[in-house]
Structure formats: structure tokens, C-alpha cells
Length: 222
Ligand SMILES: [Zn+2]
Image (cartoon, rainbow, N blue to C red):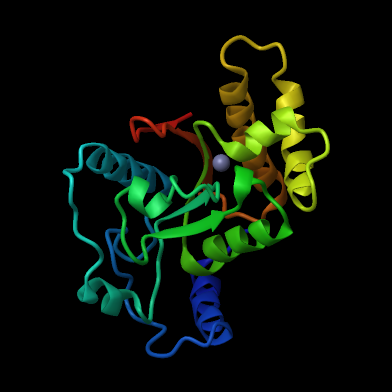
């Protein structure tokens, strides 16, 4: 499904009303996007790479978002990238990519699995906020994928996560390399494919996968 500029503009207005946002809904975009339009997927990917490099080499202390940034984004958002990530407390996309308020639209659940709610969130960002890059980011030593490798009958709703991740574990059995890393990479690839095949995206939206190294802080885009 394609969304032209008029529909997008209407979408921004309707979504602002839907979410009860006040203030101007027709103001110019903030941030580093292409004048008159959202940042392209390629520009967004470059910005994430630059941010991750800043994070990897960051000194011991770094500034938090300022009042100015909060005020700038209070009534308007145009996140340049959407990150589908794991709920793991060590993988916060805003920190890993050195971004601030309003920069990233983030969907996080253990094991970065995709469900209808995640797909709805993704479609919202693409249709209403102009986001054109979607990154599914798995990470080193993911506990959810580990559980899917080890536990046949996890209790409660953890079992739901395990069942969602299990196909990636099965698909990579016997492959060369580290079994856990293989399953994490495969799990992200399957989530990305789910998004491509199910979500209504614009033709210029890209879905890519990434792997975050907990030890080095480096995000590797596949
Ligand atoms: Zn995880």
C-alpha cells in the first residue's frame, strides 16, 4: 500500500488527534531529514552507524537529553528509524545508537518477536510518522533465545515467547559456528521477513537486521 504526501499529512493530523496531542500538527519536520520529506532509509542507516560509533567510543560520562530537546519534540515527532529490539535492559536503542528524544520509534519485547501489536506499531510509524528504516536488532547472549534453545515447557507466557522463537532454533540446528548466535541471527531474520510480508509498508521503506555485541557495543548490520 502506498501513501502519498496528502494522505501522510492527513495521517499526521489524525494520529495527533487520536493520541490527544496538543499544539501544532502541521509544523515543519525537525531533525536532519531531507527538506520537505522524511529521511530516506539509506540516510537513516548512515545516521544509526554514526551514532553507534559515537556510543562505542563514548567517554565515561555523556550528557542526557536537554530541556530544549524535550520542548522541541513535545508536540511533534518524526523518528528517522524504527528499531524492533529485545526487552533486555542492556540493549536500549537510544543509548546504543546515541540518539535522543524523538529520534527512534522503538518496539521492544523479549526475543524481538513480532506479533499483531508490533506490526500495528510498525505500520503506524511508517504511515503516520514518515519512518522509512526498520531495524530488527538481535543481541549477543539473548536470554529469550537461550530459553528457546533449552526449555521445552517454559511456564506461563514465557512459553509463548519460546514457541515463537523455537522455529529459528530448529532452522539453525547443525549449522557451523555458535548455536546461540546462529539462532539469534535467524530469529531476527525471521522477524524481518514477517514484517516485510505482513506489514503495509511504503515502497521506499527498508527492513534490515542487526546484531548487537554486548561486549564491544558494536552493532553489526547484516
Ligand atoms: Zn534478548
